[in-house]
Image 1 (tube, rainbow, N blue to C red):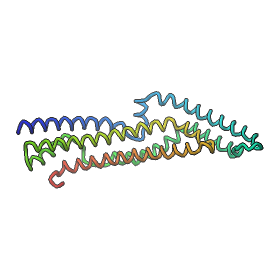
Image 2: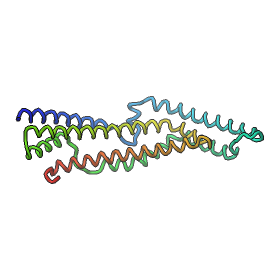
Image 3: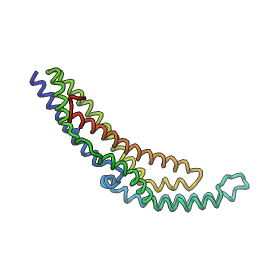
Image 4: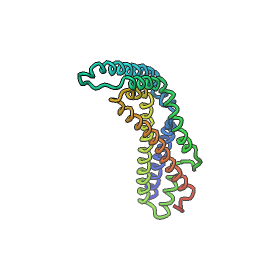
Length: 236
């Protein structure tokens, strides 16, 4: 049974070392700072200016079209009030033009609690040591084939943690897409008929920032659990 124990322990250790590598790589790409997103998707910064120009063009086109529809009011055609339409159009042209600064401010506000969570003092995460502690605890109870149970537990733990990491990375990429297409979303708010699209984008953007923060919170909870287990395994 000693050979089986050695094989199982080696496999589990390699799995946990790989999990350490994935954890370090993914966590480095998370946050409300879009610099990492631009490093991997540099075209997003260049195409952002295209979206700004496109959004202003959409607003101006809608402005002219809605004003033109006012000539058909006598024929029963619905149209927006010219004064309100003009005010909304000018306002959202400014919002689209300065969307970079607006979104940057929102990301800075959302990034503050995110940084607080990531920089909070908790025990360091070392999956390899965590695996050794599991094997030691299981070994107190029995030996031999019971080590397979430890390996299964380690694999389940690793798989769920990897899923959580990649979910957080996916939310970061989606947040980057929302950030660099923001001008087009602002252009949808210039008309009453498309204002629901702008409101939906705002809810989605705010929700992604919040979920990214909650992902970091969950990861830190897991890290603190592992650290506490390493510090005093027999008390858990």
